Image 1 (cartoon, rainbow, N blue to C red):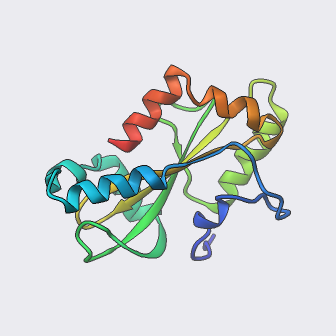
Image 2: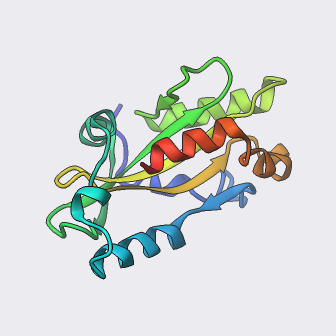
Length: 165
């Protein structure tokens, strides 16, 4: 199935009916601060361009193209890679490779009693290895308020730290 350009970036703030989703944690301010620290010379390139090989593989094969230039190397555009964490998924999460997969996890989150699925959208540069967690969103909008507080749990903290590193 061919995916439309920009399908991962379109999942950020609304559901299929155009209703705004709750429980979204945006990490753009942290991203901006990190880029500023690099540009001021307080961080070396190898400290910010250290993406895990598996993230780079996912970015090359399944990343959603954007028009945003990499803020570090400025040679390539960044791609968005989304991982879903939740029950009955591997501890390293599940990389979303098709637009329909995210909808499947949204449906599961609504039907399963313990269906707390969380999507992590990561920006990655295939050339230099820059990466940053852009946003985190709960896939069950009915539980978004309580789920947002659950994102502070140890398990989700470890997942966020691994994706940010």
